[in-house]
Length: 211
Image 1 (cartoon, rainbow, N blue to C red):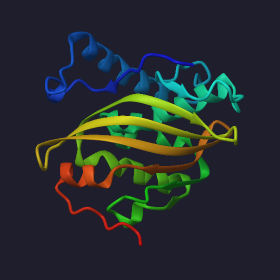
Image 2: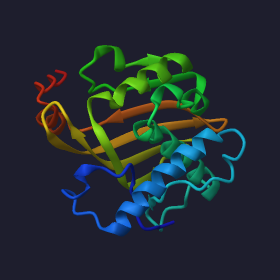
Image 3: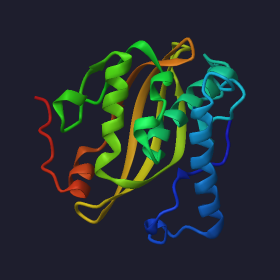
C-alpha cells in the first residue's frame, strides 16, 4: 500500500520556518484532532478509525507476511502513541489503553538511564508522559512501515520536528522503532535515533557509544 505522507501536529510559530502552506496547516490541525479524538474513543471505535498515512516498504517479489488489517492496526497504534506528543494535557491522555499489561519499552539512546528499559503498563505510561517535555510544537511525517518474518512484529520509520525552548533551536530527527503487537496493544517498543543530531538541538553532550 502506498499513500501520500501526512503530517500530524499542532499549528505552531515555527511552521513558517518549515515553509508550510495554509493547506498544510489545515492538515496539521486536523491530524492532531484525529489522533486526540481517536485515542479518547479507544476501545470503542479503534477498529474503524483510520491509521495515519504511511507507505509500506516491501519488495513486490517477496510474499507479504502480514495482512492489510495487521498493517493498519500497528499504524493506528503508532499514531495513538505519537498522540502523546501532541496532547494539550498529557496527564489526561489515556496512554495506558494502548499498551499491554506486561509491556516493555526500550530507549537505549536516552540520556536518562531510567528510560532505557521500562517494564509494565503503568511504568511505561508514566515514562512516555515525560518524553515530550523538553520540546514543543511536535510534527510527525513520512511514516514508513516494514514487515518482518513475524506477522506481529514491525519496524516503523518516521520524521519528527520540534522546537527546543532551552536552545531556541529546531530539532529534526528520523526515528526507527521496532514494535510488537499483541491482542491489539503494544507489547514491546524499541526505538533508536541519531544521538548527535539530538545533542546539537538540545545542547547536551552526546552519549558515549557502547564499546
